[in-house]
Amino acid sequence: MNSYDRVMNTLKGLPVDRVPVFSVLGAYGGKLTNTDLRTLYSDAAAYVAGQQAVQETFGMDLVLATFDYSAVAEAFGGTVAWDDKQAPNMKYPAVTTATAALALSLPDPQRSARLPVILNATRQLAKIYHAQVPVFAAVPGPGALPTMIMGLEAWMDTVLFDKPAAMQILQWSGQFFVAWANALFEAGVTALVITESVASAEISTRTLFAEQFLPHVREIFAQMRGPLVFHHGGGRLNHVLDLLPGLPNLAGVVVSSKDDLGDARSLIGPDLLLVGNLDNLSLSQATAKEIRARSLACLRAAAPHGHYVLSHSAADVPLSTPPENLHAMIAASRDYAALGKDAT
Amino acid sequence: MKLSDDVNFQSWSEQLYKIMMNADRQGASDLISLSMTKGLSSEQIIVKLLDPALVKLGILWEKESVSLAQTFVAAKIAEDILLRCVPEVSMAHNNPVVIGNIEDDFHSLGRRIVATFLRASGWNVYDIGNDVPAEDFVDKALEVGAVVIGASAMMQTTALNIRKLREVIDSRGLRGRIKLAVGGAVFNWRPDLVAEVGGDGTANNAIGANALFLKLQAEAKGALIQ
Image (cartoon, each protein chain N blue to C red):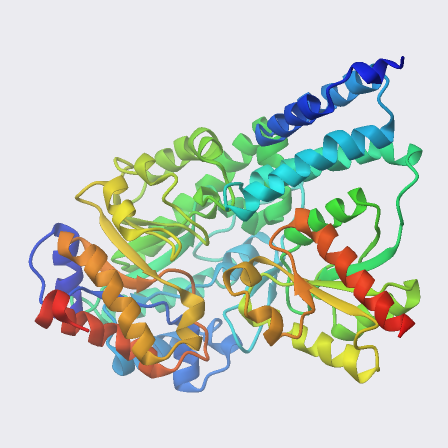
């Protein structure tokens, strides 16, 4: 069974040879190909080569389209903080007020800044791995997208103290979200991971998310041309998980390492894909034996139900992560399939 | 008898806390106006209404039961109250402190909230912004006479840049005389990072920053006396 069939069967609740394993190894591709990160995230061929190296080295059950939110910020006019140890970040947003944001032009996914580079890399990856390995892309969620345009502080200020302006911003930026997400689908991604940080307990209350973001998320999701995986975006998600089933095109959720997998399953119901929930930060610090033990604990908690993917739960793994720790995740899945709960 | 003698401070502070949790900035303003008409002094408003509400919020944060949105509103409310009250209040110390995001880190929101709470607690805050080189922290601290520096980072990779700040403090012979407080989301997820980057202490939230900075200040002044 190849990775594509393994993931598709898992989505549908059909039998699989083992639980699929995901890892976010965008920047890690640069490490494997000895490519500096600025080149990796600016050159489609370099990024594709990185993902090929990742696939050859680890055999994860996904290929990752360019996971680089700074490109989105840059397309709106923001600046990028380049780093040789991690994926680029937004340095400064394009604007710092809602009024200034609404005066900006929406980027064109086919033309603006590095967005065409991302689409080009995605097309190449989709062609190379067609029906072999699913290609996932990540995009900032409709509620979090304004942070890429005006920064978190200004966006929180607007959401909390100027609701009409926040609604305007959401409607306006939502047009870009739909265009960008659907351009990625057209480029060949299998599914989109929507990182919605405003859903996490660390950012929003349940009420704030339910009243100010969820209606917009529902409206935007209905316009998507493919399956979506809802990601916590950096914090605990269980406090709103029960609100998510029924969202248009929703195929699954990624919960954080601080969420309980059993509770998550109860909250999302039986049919949605559940992804998680190893701690990213521990990946570079722990031993392979510890990663194996933690992976098996996740598998015991979530695999018996099905519709489950073993994964760590945040963004790119630290580049200092030893390869054997990533191999340990797949070995745990393989051994769990062979030995079940007796795997140690 | 003064009008303020009738005021049940605990009940009023509880009201303010509830208003904060409901993100009702206008409600807070109304409550403070009412408390002033009842004859509460600016100092009473800060010490007996605002401070207990913030402490309660801090306890909730420790239990991971309060969101950034609620903290954000609480900080705004605290700022609003301070703007109305501080000119009349004789601050307890007004000691200088330098805070900023370490080099390569651009996540300013947490730092700004910390600045608000530190000001609310009587510190003279020198906020030197994002992406600050290690040397600049120390130069500023020496310039303004601060004995505590607060360095913020959100992610592990940028948190590790704080090691350079530790090195600069030490290489200038200031270890112990200038204390290094570190903070940011990653330190809550990985408390062992505090020691790894050479921090002298951390607080899990903005509300706890005052206690941490007071402790570090006392340690630094103790070192100076020795």
